[in-house]
Length: 388
Image 1 (cartoon, one colour):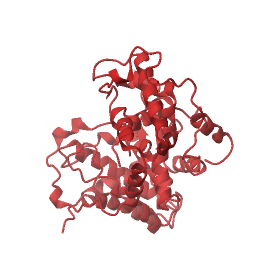
Image 2: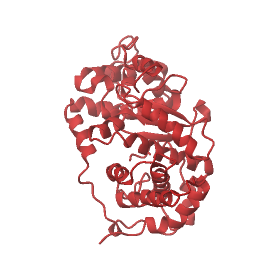
Image 3: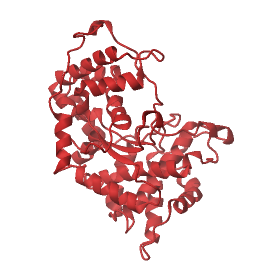
Image 4: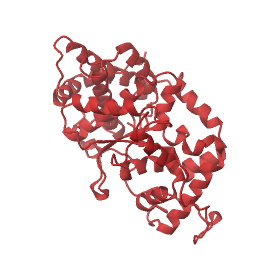
């Protein structure tokens, strides 16, 4: 999925959090009202002050590797993606000019996730899905995955990313002021941040098709975030409403929440054990280094999802989900966020299935380091050319 990618509620106290986030917005000024700038006079070239990627990078490893990916060696197709067709259908219902301005001009999708990553915590009860319909599943999945793997994980928080936060002028302004610049260098003042947030607020409410922010375009993602001490931000898995709703729309909501979370938790295993520092034989580009860690996370997920002491899901059902989920990846072999081809990703997950199957009789769970060692040994086969 997208580079930040890497995938919650029904009852009780969590519903209160939904009301807080989705209710009427306090003090939501129209753009320019009471501010030093007018809407017509501002269009900042917003740039992130923090790394655009939510995960660690391996750029320093490039000097130890030898060859680049040859796209002619691999099968790749972006046809037949029902969840993408669904997403495009939802986009087609909107005022496209307004949506483009929000998404590209005001980085609305980034704002949604940056707010969750840097400023939201489990101190506020979390909900998942537009109406909280995934909350119980996500909270149980978090508990089960943490119990399954051997890394210290009590400090890893699970939080939701909700497009409805774009109505909250103070939260949006906080993201702009702390995490963006005007032009790459100029800090965004508090006053300007409020103006920009006011514009976002008004544009979100201007189009009924955006449902006050409950449109998948603003939250079609999931993130493994290692934390940031400068902001006192804890490590997190951030699950976006949009990606959960998308897989629900195509009938895969029984497995998608577990599968997406398991993949993102795989990145936390990598953070904890230093696997982002692995030397990757043969890799010469950041794309290849990212591919390695993404395929490893796919393998971790496949192992957990089908292990008898993990999610214990039917392998065929898991593959139905993964065949679509992995096609949301890419064949952009030169992109630093390259996740591996759909075939490679499925091969990595199947490696996890096979290792899990070996343990079914005795119920053994490999340690994360044991599983990593087996993945490293199998990696050349997982990424072997498959073009006919």
